[in-house]
Amino acid sequence: MFDIAGFQDSATYGRVKFDGNQVDNLVGLVKADIQSGANSANTVWGARTNIAAFERGIYGQSDGAAFTGWHFASLQFFTNGYDLYLRGNSVDDTTFGVVRSQSSTRATDVNKANVHIEDVSGLVFNSLFISGKDITRNGIEISDKSSVVINHLFLEDDFDSGITLDDTNYKLVIHNLTVGTSSFTTTSLAIIDATARRGYLEVWVNDEVTSSPLITAIVDLTATNANQVRTTIVKMPFGLAAVAPFQYSGDTASSLDVALAYTADGIVRYYFDGTNTFFSVQDKIITPAALASGNVTLDIEDAEVMRVTGDAGTTTIQNLTDGAEKRKVTLINIGSDAVNIRDNVGGTAKDRVISPTGANISLAQHQSAEILYDPTQIRWRVISTTGT
Image (cartoon, helix red, strand yellow):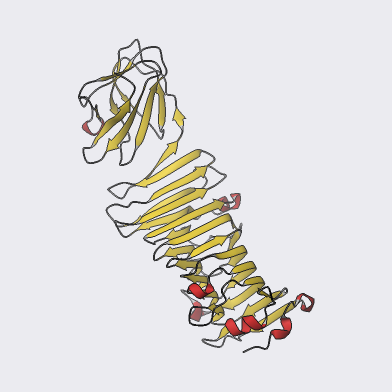
């Protein structure tokens, strides 16, 4: 389509522009065009390249329009249906230096995305800037066994979803996710929408994400299949009250998803229980006030470790609150008086504790008990203890 061989190593030419003039189904650049503009190191154009008003700005797929192992130095897109449409393993191991992508607002381009990635491995973006403009479009679509690393991602304006993770076995790592201060202002949503059955996501979030009150969470995990297994890690420098790391949606009875958030409030683990409740357990140690004498109910709050103190050896814990599937807590007696754990008697039935011996357990000073909630038995279970 274009004679661009002359732009090889074209830093001296400044800026190169390709304009599709909004012709339907027109593709900007494919393999042959890109090869003619590359140097011996497979680096495509040293100058910034502008690509505007095409159905697909750059189109790569496994049927021959491919450029495995290539490096694009600097690209800028305006009002294309798709700016980058990358599909198939013949686009593997491609690196993009700086990419600026501005969504189309044409009626014919709704329900599309700035960047579409499908069945591509080893894809790297050093810096990716995406401007949304339209709540009917997605920023990035990733699906079907794709493996992508984005070193810096900047999302601006509005989207249907900032990022969608669909189909199976995605791997996405974002080292720095930033959101523009006037972005995500039209509708409430999570930045990343994960509906795929299997996958791995790890994202570092910048403080600017807290600027929009309509961002409900960093990641929405949608459960539509009981066998969904996804590992999701969010690292954010602010607390849970600012923006939630995760939210849950879907209609499946259970899910094997496990999600982990590193926050200013500590490490938080999130799980789905058997009734579609999405809850969190904060990885922190709590030291409550000294427990009263007699039979007591211990509110374990959001702790994984509780350091307890009894009253003259007469304190007996007969109930633990907040039981749910996969919930686990360790009790440590830090006082000089013994603290007892009552075996499956008294108080609220679902909060009772089952001892492995069928008898009460006594924790002397510095002794501990690890207790796991059993959703089938609807009881807490002592699974290990140094007590007697």
